[in-house]
Length: 297
Image (tube, rainbow, N blue to C red; front, side, top):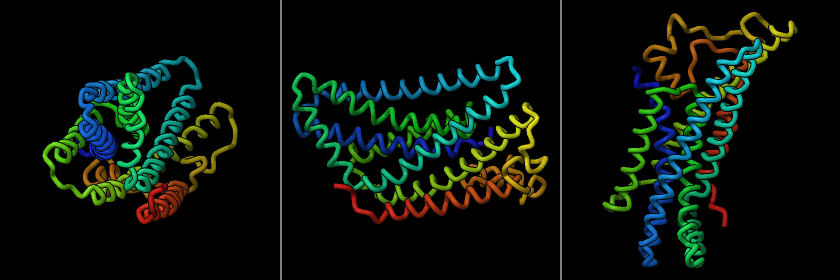
């Protein structure tokens, strides 16, 4: 098993898990300050429910993909490529939004959570459900984004599971270090560093999504006998500009590392290179601007 296949999942889970851990830590600290520590069990229940919901989403997606594979129709290739393309587009949109939005809101996160929790505690006996819901949403949101990424990048299986577990363990350790041991961690530097790495990983999803789109069009063209393809190698991606299968294959070291973190492929078409470059230029600009922006009031 190549450990490099688990690294992108580890990075995503570490990033998402750390964000959820910060929410949990802030909530528990606020409960302690308000002498409402008896509500901590609802925090734990929210964590368990959020993780269970994320696993359930992953199981459902796995069942759907297996069901598609077993369909007895000539349209199976089209359905499969369309599903994988949809997952890729959702993952790109969600992770890009999270990257930019969370960076902008990071400095006001603590105040927002404390404000929401204060309003929740004023609900009396219903406060426990408010705490539970707050934690559930935080954990489920991060878990859902991770699951979508795993399926969009076609990294299901043992490597993806191990990468997710390692990332979750790392995020938990960061939370314990911050809120239990009082260790000073430069969270701003941490999120900025992981954010730039995540930007490159998401750009790699753009290359995969374009390839799924091309395969989808090609499958439709073959079924309907339509002249949709520009060449025999691709339909909408244009000419092949890079063939590194003999020099730098993406299934062997170091190509597999470049594939995991930079979106490298040993076959790259004009459309993929343009899409990758445009995404990095556009989203990269938004991300670096978000690093300098002030949090919304």
